[in-house]
Length: 109
Image (cartoon, rainbow, N blue to C red; front, top):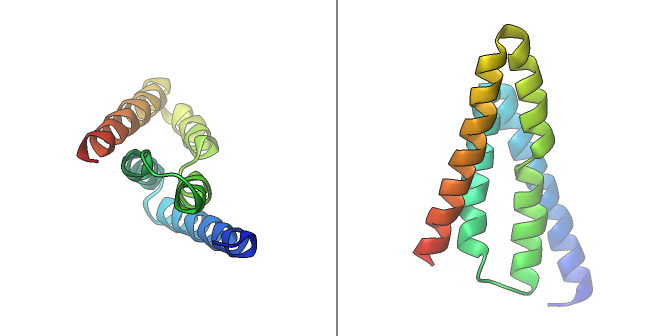
């Protein structure tokens, strides 16, 4: 794959991941952010054994834009206004859920 093709693919994947995360988070609130982070971790686990252009485009651009730590922090800050315990649970669920999803993806390959 040429450098230009990788750059174009990277840009398209990053834009698609960003829009998908934004739409899901907007529609589902904190649950949407949780969903995209866990799903993204699972797919990244599946892609962990790949290398080259596919890993760069899908893993770094697409999944990097889809999943986001800043989204977790923003949602947990909003949730903490209602309940600090709820915010802590949200962050804990995100981390354990994403770790379990990534592990599952790794074991399937």
